[in-house]
Length: 132
Image (cartoon, rainbow, N blue to C red):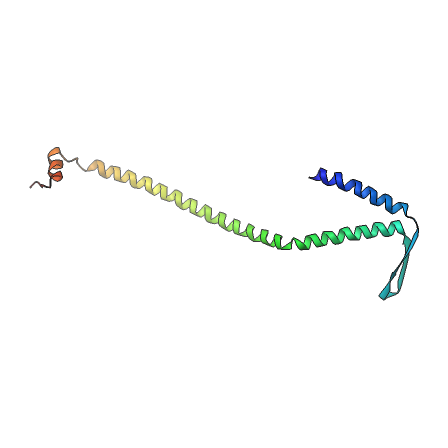
């Protein structure tokens, strides 16, 4: 992108400078409400006016993007807040997964301690008869 800017901008700057320095006649500028007159060559006036236009364009561009910069700051703050919440929730999930593993191990221990029912007990439960 910088190469493209240079490719377009450099010839434009060269043309403006050639135009400015070819016009060496004197120009008188009258600043009306202050009764001030300035006499300079046209080349100096052209260069100053081009620079003034460039500066005003940059200021206008900066001011027009201020809502976008404000939104960007807001989204950065939201992103930081959500990242902190994400880290907290990730820690909670990992601790809960550890609890699940512990509970499964405890269930296996309890299951191993309970004696297996015999076939007779299974059939009795299946057909609704209970042994006494």
